[in-house]
Image (cartoon, rainbow, N blue to C red; front, side, top):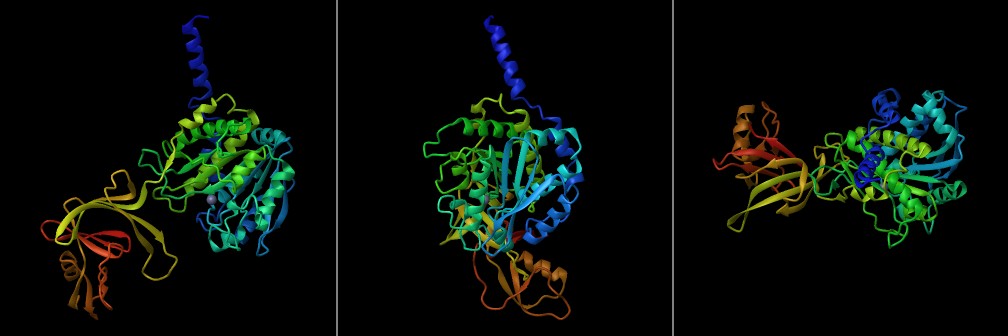
Length: 461
Ligand SMILES: [Zn+2]
């Protein structure tokens, strides 16, 4: 064979094995998703009791198809259930929400079970079930989910409890992994929305990891295959959310489940769902997890990932952490008699209160933040920060209020019976001058253009 032929053949092989082809099953999952999406999970917060109720409804559509068992109980006595389906020899174990406030994949699992229930007589599902036995533990940490916190009711992080097994929830996971000696494992989490794709301003909406099983990050046949499977899934993401996928840090954590389960011989894949612009409840993330998990099962059953070079995995860009919720660029900050041009980067956590303060505002960094970007960005060059003043009188009308806002008044001292202010606030005590509280951005005509208040940017017309 001459050299040209060899090259052509190699190129063909790479293109064939690692091209843009998406299986028809993956397309079906993606395109027909609304048919199987289970009602009631459009918000991130999922109560354990609600999950059990809905899960029961989904499984009752095909009662002979699924096996459900209670594996054990949480610290506070909530049941931890596992749903198993399929009759094959290859065991796949997946668990979600070991961190109580990471519910995306839990919602996806319910959707996928709904797909299986509705399509149990279709060939594609039959093929899967003939070769695989799939075990789902949706919500390993129901006490944490109920409180909407990462930890369990003892206050510990279950993903740092794989060795000591302090928590009953950890013991459940260890016991089930050992008893199945599962061939494949899926560890399903949500990651910080501040992760971006290395060198891009795109949020890392999904990140993958083939967990390391030692400090040297050694390879093994199992870890190699996990990498191949991830590269297969990465191509799917590149079709549906191009350049919004990252590779999670693979530093070894001796106490984590993922790392140990890889060590114990299960081919382990970590899927982390991150942020989505304009989708705070992560409904797109939920759909993508559903597509990815279903597609991974097909790949395992058919060996679709096995011709992908292992090295493709390291070509997936890494996660970086260069995002803010809000970035204000090149604003003039007055300090000790001079103006300095700085960028301001904010984190905004939604506060769980009924009063007016909706966000916990944190000025995370300031200075040259040119390597960072925000979910929202404001170009503030030629604008300067001016702290608000108190108007010692009554606000008379909407027009009056607007003229006061333009001059930098945010507070008023006397309540008017005639006009209820829309934006201006009553001054109670002294006004705090803080970059995390409230300030105006003035232009060089000495007019306010924007008001920063409660983490939000309000344009002053
Ligand atoms: Zn997590």
